[in-house]
Length: 67
Image (cartoon, rainbow, N blue to C red; front, side, top):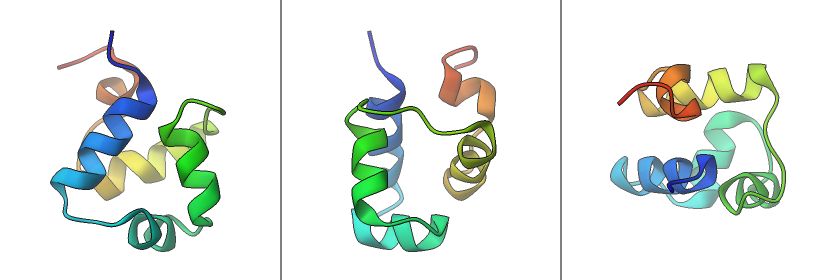
């Protein structure tokens, strides 16, 4: 099963962003983004929304409700 973090990492790589670049775009530190990508913690709804916007996908896609 593909996890939320797996999707985040894949989308970041597809967009050609380093973890530092993506974190800067999201207004967080790279350690926080790393914890999201490694499924250590889950982002808040507002953070998940910012991630969806950055990567050009829906919240439903990130949550695994849409393909």
